[in-house]
Amino acid sequence: MDESSVVRARDVARKAGVSTSAVSRAFTAGASIAPETRRRIIEVAEEIGYKPDLIARSLTSGRSNIVGIGVGNLDNPFFADSLNRLSSAFATAGLRVLLFPATAQGASEAQVHEVLQYRLDALILLSTNLSSSLANQCRNAQIPVIMYNRTTADPGRVSSVTGNNHGGARAIAAHLVAAGHRRPCFMAGHDDASTSTMREEGFGGYFRDRGLPPPMRETGHFTREGAAAATRRLLTLPEPPDAIFCANDHMALATIDVARAEFGLDVGRDISVVGFDDVPMASWPSFALTSYAQPVDEMVAETLAIALALGEGATGPVHKVIEGRLVLRGSTRRLPPASKPPHEG
Image (cartoon, rainbow, N blue to C red; front, side, top):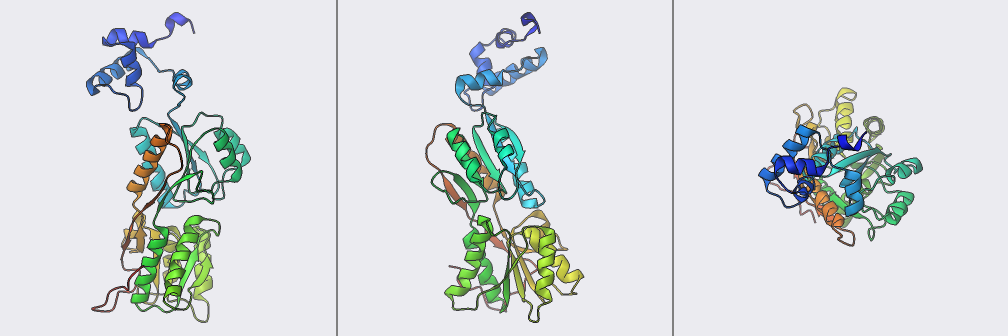
């Protein structure tokens, strides 16, 4: 393209009646500029076809305003909803989002190489674990990593934002004990997933602290198919559980379907089923799932705040645990009259 045909910032400045520095601020997230001035500059830029040179700007500022998000199991509606809200929040803050696929166990070597080709201001890992290779290479490239709804074995180097996995699971245990359940079961996700591990520790710890028999255990692998198979194994036992706490709602919804359709059980009376996350489907009348609600908006806001702070040069990892609440619905047995759950602590 001939240089004379390239629209430059000074062309926008001349037509909009502002300085070239004002044009730069109009396209810089968080820069100080009057809203009306920004609007006029953007309108002129669109009219004459000006596009800011993001690559040149990143070389000058040391920032790309690009945040990477590694996504794994989006079959789980909790993560699909979180991704949508994360993308919107970062866009509102003037940051662009780059998505890359990853398995629940982490990113592959090829994916690591691809991600590091970009000048990322931060990398958010959503529904995926942190591989040692990715951790080392991000550290060498000075790319901050934030785990969303996960923690890592290296908390001194990687930030995290999670719900209260331990406390939420104890609240669920207290509810089931108060409702008279004596054969509870915990359905785990992946053994190497911090969310599943912490929820199991909280749930089992409640029974252990009170001298009660430990819960039964099954594994649903955080999938609908895995949970359905695990539910069939449990409900064909000589003494099946009278309550099943699934490590997330995705598995709990499958458990309800199998218990009703294949075993003819009245969920909430013959057996109680509890999930974790409180995804939108949990409130549907056909499920009416009791669940520990994770405050997604607050988790997203904290993730954004950490990313912005790290981008401004904040040092050291940040770890945030966001309190949720137990939402009682028809999938669990009601408490006896005039009774209330024992203390959850």
